[in-house]
Length: 78
Picture 1 (cartoon, rainbow, N blue to C red):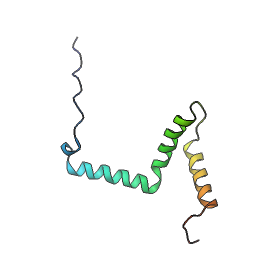
Picture 2 (picture 1 turned 60 degrees about the horizontal axis):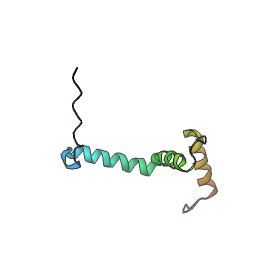
Picture 3 (picture 1 turned 60 degrees about the vertical axis):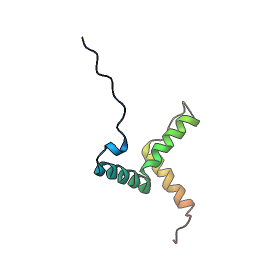
Picture 4 (picture 1 turned 120 degrees about the vertical axis):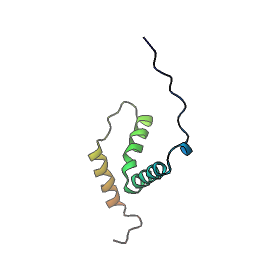
């Protein structure tokens, strides 16, 4: 029985093709602009601050987020 080969160090960002770096950067940028990453941040913070308590589902989180935006319009014109 042979043991699996040890995993080497992760490839440096320079070792990845340029198009892949651009694609990752674009994916990150779009997630930040659209608010898609907000739920991931919510989950991480909730796990750190309130361990063991129930977590809002994605739908409930989005509903609360939109209700908050409606209550506090911020820098909108209408």
